[in-house]
Length: 147
Image (cartoon, rainbow, N blue to C red; front, side, top):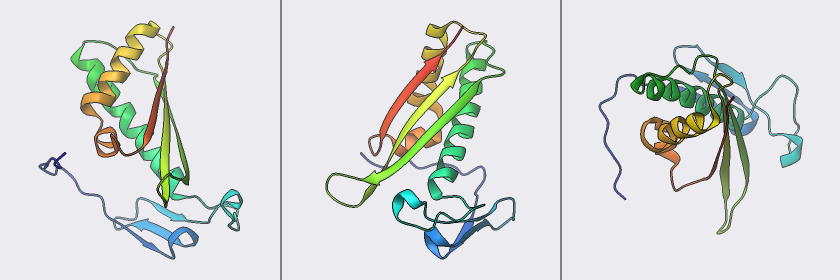
């Protein structure tokens, strides 16, 4: 499958030094984090640090939530108060190296479960840029919950 070109609306730039036991910061200084390999992965698991998976999970959840709002507005539906939780796991993959798996949980307490499922699936299939970027490259599970 060929890559799709985009017309950039905004570009975020971040620099990292020291890899998983270092520091990462965006060039506009809106994000600045110290990183440490978790003990479960054989690292020091230092307090007050994060991991690339935490950053990925936060970004994907926020992006998916915004895309869900966009899809809902197209259908004249209201998903205000929606909670999107992204579990991003990392581990060895078949064929060598490491991979990521995502479990995306979308909860809209004010909407019937079937509608939440339909909107979340459309979000994943057609709108969310994280979903487009990772499709076919990671294990992805979509879990939805409604009224």
